[in-house]
Length: 445
Image (cartoon, rainbow, N blue to C red):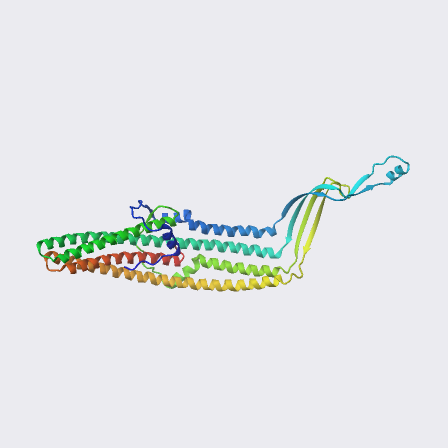
């Protein structure tokens, strides 16, 4: 029997984390329906949580990009001590007359540079015209949308891994059941061969060969049960559980009635990877616009209020200031040229990436459609082969019991039946996995 190929990197990782199946009896698995398992994957799966967290990080960047367009308010406080102080005495005309007459005068002191001072200030800055930041904000929003689409694509991939893993476990269960039937038949055949040897109807070699086949079938059963335990534990790891999980599946879906053109159109309209690439192209376009808008001036208004324990030269301890500022960088060493060229290259790369993703989706749909068609035919042939092998095994067994068929033919027929049953289990699991891959390719999973 050819092994089923790895379904996805996620399932392979889960199998690796699960490790080899223990020799002792495994814990009774929890049985879930496929819809229940898919909901649990989205709600509690570690990989799904990681994809959602990456989308949340991208959404946080939108708030950061909006910061240059919003007002800012800052408060400052300081203590200053100078090595020297400079204080003037403010004298008006009346104080001068009193000073001439020798009368006492208490002039007002004006500190140009106090020895020490405590001060506090609050500043409000309001951006009025910031062209490049507008484009940066739009780019950040498209980047967040791309990250969300990427998270949806990752979740679709995890769903595919879960569904294909469930079919892999289903195939392992059917293989184990076939091994149990084959073992029971081999033991019964070995007992018949022993009776024939004792009766002198069969040579001793017949009993030995029948016993050898029984041991081989027992080994097959051990391996099949270990595979069942391992796949169930891998499904549990995907769902964020440290226990085995069994997923109840329905019969594999029949091939889609719609043609490749309809499936391709559906995939192009639903696949989140295409949305992610389109948003990345928008990001690159907005970054190019931002690079070009850097040539324009920026306009802002600011206001501040301040207070000091030592009077200012105005004689007051508090004050305020309002300003409107225009900033127009005329030459920045070529930085803007470099940003524009970088943005143009990013846009060209994003356009190429979007087209490459579109072609990859179309190829994936075609491959999935072909795989489902081939898997359907393989299952039909495997079931036909099993029916023929079952008839051959029954005929050989009747001939062996009647003494008209040799033990070699009976053992060969029993082995062919076992291989045919394993082939049916493999073909059914492949068909289920192929149907899930087709749904994933069309964006329906």
